[in-house]
Amino acid sequence: MAGVFEVEVDGVEHDHGLEHHDEPNQIDLSKLSPEDKWRVEHARMHAKHKGHEAMHAEMVLILIVTLVVAQLVLVQWKQRHPKSYNLVTLFQMWVVPLYFTTKLHWWRFLTTWFIFSVVTAYVSYRATRKPLECTTPRLVYKWFLLLYKISYATGIVGYTVVMFTLFGINLIFRIKPEDAMDFGVSLLFYGLYYGVLGRDFAEMCADFMASTVGYYSASGMPTKHLSDNICAVCGQPILVDVSEEGIIENTYRLSCNHVFHEFCIRGWCIVGKKQTCPYCKEKVDLKRMFSNPWERPHVMYGQLLDWLRYLVAWQPVIIGFVQGINYVLGLE
Image 1 (cartoon, rainbow, N blue to C red):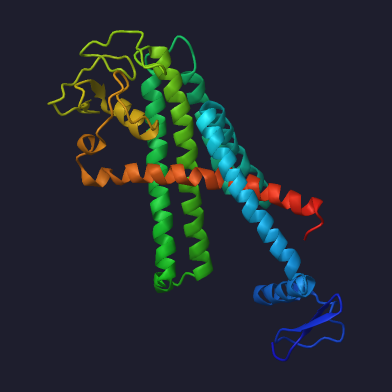
Image 2 (image 1 turned 90 degrees about the vertical axis):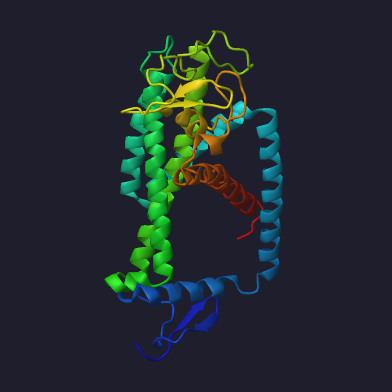
């Protein structure tokens, strides 16, 4: 396609290096390539907003002030009322991406979200029942630990694909850069989103189960005495000695000398985000607990998920609030 075309919006013409038309506003976008469509829309946007620099500066100022105020409010809320803050954040994490993906018709995400919601709802239901069944704690921690590992692996694969695309390795396999980047970013989104959501649900279930079993309470005073051969997380007997190699799972001894099932203490510390002993509240030495260096990145990944929670749960709400302020003030 040679020559130039002119886009006229509100009496302003923009020359963007395409074919000239006698009627600039009568452009059939369906006949243009994606690149040309983007150029037309880009030209129209520039023409529409030309001369509005003062308005744009005002909108940027509103955005900055709103972000600062929102951050202060969220920090104070989290410090003064952590339980309500965590519940609202969990609800935001669950609903906000659902709204945008439904609007964009991302059916693959909606399918995985539905499966995750059904299974997690069942597991959460089991975790909040009283009296607590003896098999429930292990079921809960196995599910969330499995979900955590899947989300971790998915995020790593997505990040790797993105980096390979940036270095042009996708061209070796004759894959278009935009296709490879879309695939990598999608996997990264899946991994981070379900990783954050799974950890929050796991923490909620951990609090319910631990208080029901009786070896752990929010006040720090256990309501039951812990025997030497009982796991304080699930309340079931320890069948494998610490020095023995288990067939299904091993037994861990913390620095406070309390022993736990492997799945229970891994779920409690990593998935449930509890960095203290479930019985005596002594701080857990994760470096001693995970001697294998390949397992330590799981801890750092968990910290990354905590940081991303704000971006996923609250950032869209804050941006929507800013858009509302701009609309009320007549800014566009």
